[in-house]
Length: 122
Image 1 (cartoon, helix red, strand yellow):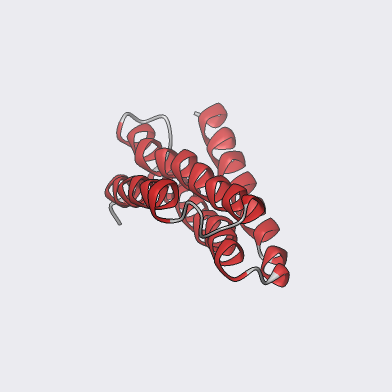
Image 2 (cartoon, one colour; image 1 turned 90 degrees about the horizontal axis):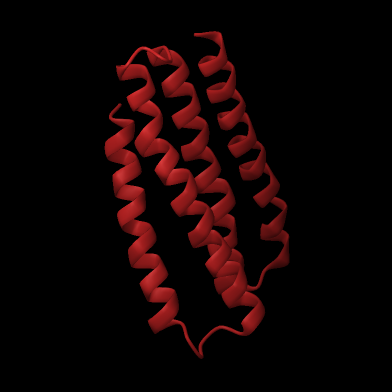
């Protein structure tokens, strides 16, 4: 899988979603929902940058390819669960969707732990 390419796609989507939130959703979402939406965009950007950069560590020998793929896969999972559940929560107001968000947070933590272990191991 081309994880850097995937990160670039998710970064592009982040900009589109951020602009949509700033211009298309103003006045349509209440302040609480808008804050949730913005948090989803922010976490998507940060972790998409990780997907963009982590494979470079494997290319220069600071990580193995499997470590890189594991970390990026966990980041992708985190984006889908964390940001995805927050987007859904912002649009629907269904509070139970917030129960999914911590699973995405755990995936983010696991991704950074895999990266940390791999970088210190090499």
